[in-house]
Image (cartoon, rainbow, N blue to C red; front, side, top):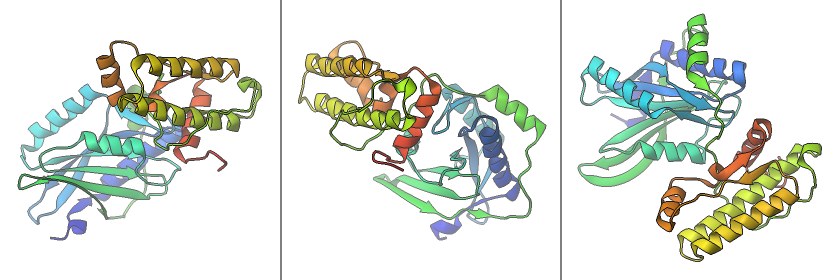
Length: 299
């Protein structure tokens, strides 16, 4: 069977996904995520179902599932279906944005690496989507190939948001105090041309955020590649914080502490955006959104 014909989702489950995305956007303008199962059928196809949201922290540009909740979901449906060939599907919404794989999405997909393949789905409120099959191993060979393929959807009804769904959303979904998001574009520069962020155009703050992320990327890479030592790395970050304070920027760099080994371990699992501590959730959300779209010189 062709890969692009192997996966399908019942219309009820598809519109359940759309309903969750609608609630998250209407209530908080946030993304939302959850899990589904993919169960092999007699005809050789996989059926996507068992749509659920789990305990999570969300923002307008990121969503993070609670690890214990993920483990509980997997145990629940492993016991229900008792099928050794079943798979889990990580899904999330991009509300009004396009359906695409961001850098953070790619990292999450990599976390689902296993001995065969994994599945991921991103949707938006226009019912656009991307469905990915990531093949990690086949016959013992390490492949690590990713395929974005069609997902068969039978469209017979419309989105229906229920009161029960609204209640579950309020119980399980929270806005975090620190969002895991960052950037990977390498550009030099640390030149913000404004004085007081609270009295200035938010676009300047967003541009400053992008410049800081770029410089953080460069400094962290230099340290990880042994181009500079721990002392030099810390001094560079402290200098950046002094400049940020002088310019009255509404964020600072949260510098990791510990031994060289501990700092390296932290940086291995931390993106530059995770090292930013914000005074305001509003500034943070706008800056991260702006940086996500690569907007250094304008939209």
